[in-house]
Image (tube, rainbow, N blue to C red):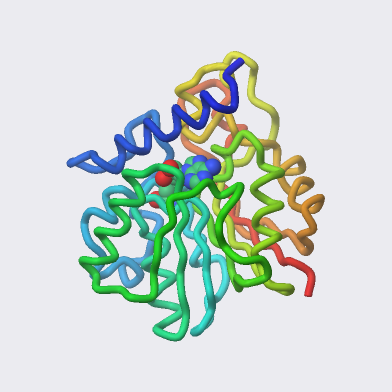
Length: 246
Ligand SMILES: C[S@@+](CC[C@H](N)C(=O)[O-])C[C@H]1O[C@@H](n2cnc3c(N)ncnc32)[C@H](O)[C@@H]1O
């Protein structure tokens, strides 16, 4: 059994490597399918360092509209790809805040923002379970292949609910399961950083969201994950939309 602290240390170590990789990310032991997830129009003009660090499993910015002027928070912002796409959508009147617990990722995202000259994006080095963001202050939370990595998902959804304004939206791309994984798979540390061991059955995940106070949870897209393990067909990349009650 891997402790919660060990999981976080492994995740930080692996995503520091991804942030620092010259040739791009996404070896077998990290999440992500990179920029195939995005329309060319969305990623046009983004720095190659933001594209190669992309480690998502979906496109949360495409789940529903981001409106000009929205304040958006990205839980687990990595190299910043979804933040930069969101920043274009919300415009100069809006603001995007990326939060990530891996210092090398936050450094990379800040360098990418500087090279883009974007003034409506900021990055915080913090765990998403406990952020310095004011309560009831955020219009939309996005997150791309991150919440599965959190050992305490209830804390993540409580924090998301705390910072969202009443009526705020949450757009999540994440790895979920159609059936639990075998114990030997979840015990393998490599499967944690690869976004597999921490994935939960969809009813458990949505139940945690409901418990935190979210409503109208909807799985808007569901794609089977392509892996070679005998249990791979149980793993799906899903897009989820939910609301904090108005
Ligand atoms: C699979 S990558 C996804 C990065 C980004 N969302 C993307 O699509 O490219 C996971 C990221 O989440 C961050 N992360 C994992 N657990 C976190 C936590 N509890 N709080 C904040 N960031 C976390 C990691 O440091 C890493 O940058």
